Amino acid sequence: MDLNNIIVLAIIATSVATFISRFLGAVTSERVDANSKLFDWFNLVAYSTLAALLSRIIIFPAGVLADAELIVRLLVLVCCIFIFIIMKKNLVIPTIFSAILLSVLTSI
Image (cartoon, rainbow, N blue to C red; front, side, top):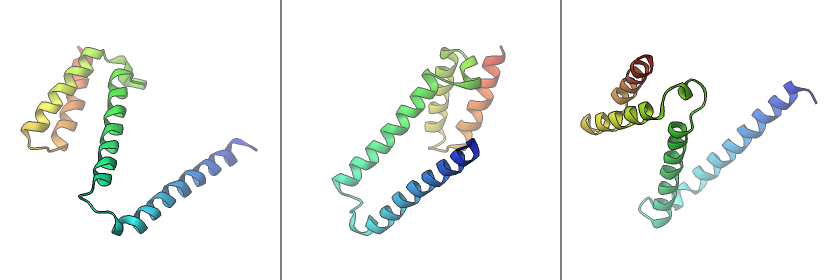
């Protein structure tokens, strides 16, 4: 089996897995109470997974971000969280600011 066939099979397999989980979620969504403990648990698992991924990106970066020092990455993170809170949970401004601040601090 050549590389192109493997890539196509991987795309098909991940697409099927994604659509099956979305379909099952849509079918069972009417029976799940949004205020239930189970719903809260899934919400907490999703947020903790996101926090773990972001922590991994900041602490063990790959690619171009690995060129920046850890202290610079942490400084940008703290500044962006502060801006996020001040701007009443607006995601656009801290995202743009983080890119600008990271590029300025790494070029010094």
